[in-house]
Length: 183
Picture (cartoon, rainbow, N blue to C red):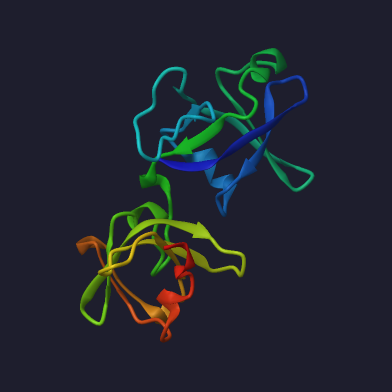
């Protein structure tokens, strides 16, 4: 499952929520099947929903002062909505649209990283970076090295073969050694 966003606060008396979306087009939620609400500690990207997580059907979607506002069929009023404030809304990965050349962050996890044909690491995760680039957080597997390396995802430096879990890296000279002080 993919995180669509969080129920930010209850709006009005009819069980509506202002929605903090992490997706590009939250209005697509109107047509989605298989939505699930889960409390904040549950991470449905890596696990199946457990109680108290529950499937939901969107009753209404609208914009309120440039923010998405939504409600669910089984949440009839403000009283019922209050207990769900802060919960996460998850959507099936099959409902997501990816553009040409786009990937999901979770597809990178565990991929082997190669430099000039030699395995140098394994991807632990992708993090948003301060300069607008995602940062590939890699476990350093080079002989005599330990720790992690944060490498910007700059398309010219990476060749991706996600189905085979293989990533080729061609960074500027010395980039992998910039943050080695933590070793």
